[in-house]
Image (cartoon, rainbow, N blue to C red; front, side, top):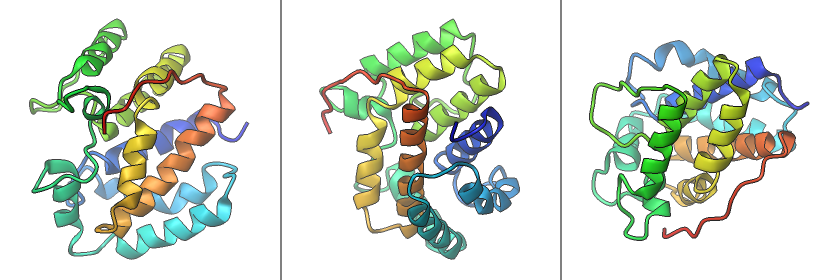
Length: 202
């Protein structure tokens, strides 16, 4: 086993938060020190890659341009190089709230999960989905966690993370994307999950 349930819960919540909240958010402040623990969370297959990306994360965490970079990547300020919503990739018209979002909503209803973010937004935002996964893991609903990963996250997440890696306007989020890509790949392999193939429209 490359990770424990406890470490999976911690890392999923950590990554989800940094893919959802703005870097100036109060919600992230207690998690800054946890970024230093990434290297010890797993038996990473490519430890040198993780180490190099962790150094970049630490280097650019206090970059004064980071809030602006977040705005471009997550709030749609101008051209959005890597939209963080699943339906953009799975919907033929690249629309928010597409069919895949409705499938995900049905899954959340089956798990009795009600999203309360305080704003009207699609539930299939990448960071929000990871934090939901952490909640499900914490509740020991492991079958539901596997379903969330294989059926709702992994069909589009690799493409999203690939676009984020290609975007050179934010070394911080570029490094974070590389780490999370390795993280999700480790989970899929370790849990022997089968990910259905969907045509991606972006």
